Each structure stands twice: as structure tokens, then as C-alpha cells.
Length: 167
View 1 (cartoon, rainbow, N blue to C red):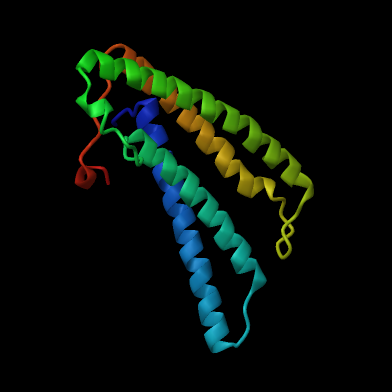
View 2 (cartoon, one colour):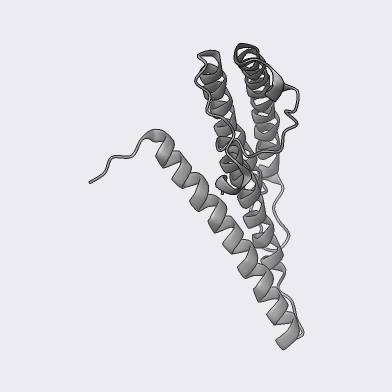
């Protein structure tokens, strides 16, 4: 039996959570479309579940893109720098991104805690469950930022993949 590293397990979790959220969103929107078309009635709970699925799909999808260095960036200047200067700029950038993500952990956690007393209209579940997707994603991206900063500091940061190789 193959042993998986922590990073491989995390990558699988990111993928399955994002894909499950996307599937939930598509299913709920489809159910609501068919219900409106066939029964001339919509279900209010489907909108809430679609929103929940959308939230997890987007935030965990962002983790996947960040891990693969597939986020949009304007690196025309950095690409022209010598390798050592590029490593310094990348190290500073990733440490700054780690700080920004850590701040976002604080604010998204605060939002999730405040959401506990605010239930959704139809299902009456706390908004905390929607907001936790951001908390988890920013925790993961903070870890990646620190990892990338250390790799860049050591001169071992993997280059961004070509667009067609990122998927």
C-alpha cells in the first residue's frame, strides 16, 4: 500500500472538497431549474445548498491554484531579473502573502464565529458552516506561502507551470 505525504493528502482533500462543492452547487441549481419548469415551484433550500457548495468550491479551488502557482500574476519584471534577485523578490512576496493570509484567517474566523447566531432562512443552519470554507482555505494558503517563501529563500522554488500544465 502506497504511503501518501501530508502534502499529497492535503492536495486530495482540496480536490475532493472543491469538486464536491461544485457538484453540490450544480445539482442544487439543476434541481431548482427542473422544479420550476415541471412543478412551477422552486425550493428555497436549494439556493442555500448551492451557496454552500459554491463557497467551498471557490475557496478550495483557490488553494489548488495557489499550490500549483496558477494564480494570475503580473511577473513581467520579476521574470527579467537574475535568479538571485528573483529569489529575493519571491521570498519577500511569499512572506507578505503569508502575512495577508494570516490576517484573513483572523477576519474569516471572526466572521465564522459571528455567523453562528445567524441561521439561513430555509435550512436554519448557521452561516458559520459557509464561512468556515474561507478559514480553512486561508490556513492552507498561509502554509503554502510559508513553504514557498522557504523554498525561494533556498533557491529551490519550482517555476510556474505553463498554463496548459496547471490543470
